[in-house]
Length: 124
Figure 1 (cartoon, helix red, strand yellow):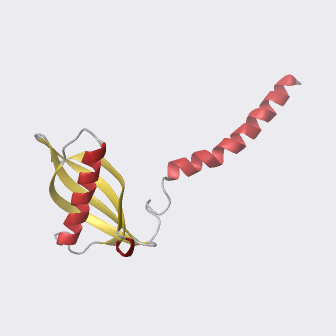
Figure 2 (spheres, helix red, strand yellow):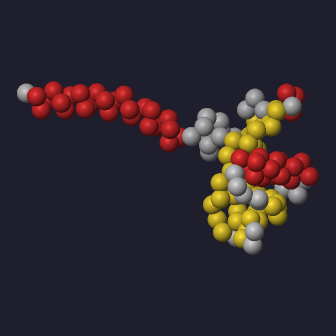
Figure 3 (cartoon, rainbow, N blue to C red):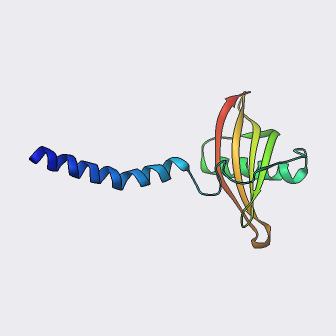
């Protein structure tokens, strides 16, 4: 009888933890792949370069890296109470160049720009 009670409590616990786990693996709302991401047509636009520079600057402030901008390889935007910029940026850290995925959120009317995340994902 105790084994059944233990299994029942374990089952209830899993029902409580499962929604938390699913929420955690989905990531931040409004940033993942769901939604209307539109390709940036002109990745050489100085404004897009400014977003990439901002992402690297903020990342360098928070870490022990000194990433130097080399170029924006591709990017997408999404409007959601502001604009999300999802960029693939080539950057150099010492002698090594890597590609980084950066997501920056901007609300120009509120003078707000925020780095959501920046991660290395492919060697260049």
